[in-house]
Image 1 (cartoon, helix red, strand yellow):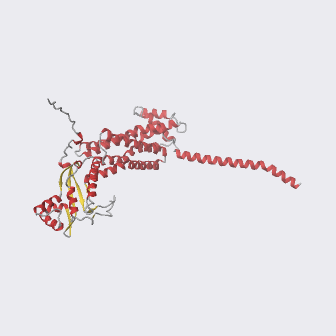
Image 2 (tube, rainbow, N blue to C red; image 1 turned 180 degrees about the vertical axis):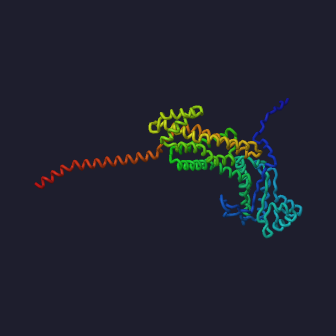
Image 3 (cartoon, rainbow, N blue to C red; image 1 turned 90 degrees about the vertical axis):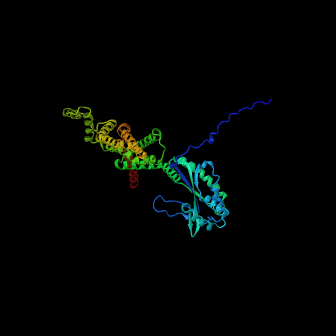
Amino acid sequence: SEEPAVRRLIEPDHSKAPVPQVPKHKQFDVSVLYGLRAARSTPKLGPPQEVWTFDPNFEPDDPWAQRALIAICTDMPSELLVVRQKCWIQNFRTWLQKKEKPFPSRDFHRDIAAWKIDWPVMARENIWMREQKMTACKLTFYVNVANDGSSSRLLDYKVHWSKYLALRNDAASLTANRAFFTAGPFLRGEAEIAIRDSTLETIMISAGCGMAGMIFFTWDLVLSLIVFVLVLLIISGLAFFMVVVMAWEIGPIEVLSLVIFVGYSVTYVLHIAHSYNEARADKINAYEAEVQAKYHGKEETSAAFGTAEAQAATCLTAETMTPKQLRLARVRLAVLHVGCATLSSAISTVGSSVFLLCCTLSIFGKLGMVVITVTTLSVIFALISLPALLMLIGPGLVPCHVQLARRAVMAATTRYRNQRADGINNHAESEPFVAGQVLEVLS
């Protein structure tokens, strides 16, 4: 007796799972061009110095060139995800068969002129004629890839086209082996990648320019460095909000937001730092800081204000304050002078940006979220983090580089005086010996 057949379970091949269908309005076309030479470079500004030209090596009347054209449209790899195509060469071959003519055509230019008369729309969209001869052509392929996909996905998909076209060019004759492809989403993806790669450099340059402006206004390296670090932290917080909290993919909107709002994030911390720098160590500013600190701690009455003034008469002055007390007084004065204005500006900015969240276009919604986030972070760092840092490690009344320069000058002056004093003493000790020698000679 025969043994019963054994059923075997075959695991499904997930590598060949069907690709989800992209809506037609989101699909895009990839154009393969023959007979054209693209410009080798395009300037960022101004008119291009080089434009496209016709390729003199392209000879469509060669039978092997026609075979290369028809080969592009047949047996396409599945990874290209082509859902439909617009290949005029296939229509031309069918037209030749109806005319009982062979393909490839042995009288190509005359046949293509006759085909153009029968198919004017397709000819006008896909071939270039000059002097009754075809000099270039285009083959169009519609792919099942979303045109609004991420830059990395688009460029990964572009690699498949690069490999496929390289194989076709290697197999083609010299008369049709310079084909290249292009698509709008590929150009956008390359531009986005280039912008994203240069984002960090641009942010550092923008923050460096802000630090240079801070140095120009305050002439204090330590204070400028503190502002520079806080600006980088604000931008880092904005990037964390976009990438982690909101789970946005890094695109042109996100990159431009990070770059543009560097200057905006400097504004609030710059006002507090500049006000701190302007609170010099004269008796008026130190006295005002102490009075304002005591006055706002009491009820806002005239009697309370008078009591505060009476108590301020016994407060420490700038000359008797320790460095810690002086930093505290300068921070109080800076926050009291521009703190309310800074907070009011932030509230008005956030209030005016809330309406962007209700917009239909996503770009305006993202812009509103970015403005609200960067404003909130900036005012928090300006009114909480920056005053705390200034009270702990804030620069003194005299900037550090000025102190170093003074110390260097004083050290050089002291060294010079010591050397001069040693020279005078040596000269004075040698004078009696010389005088004795002179007397012995005279005697």
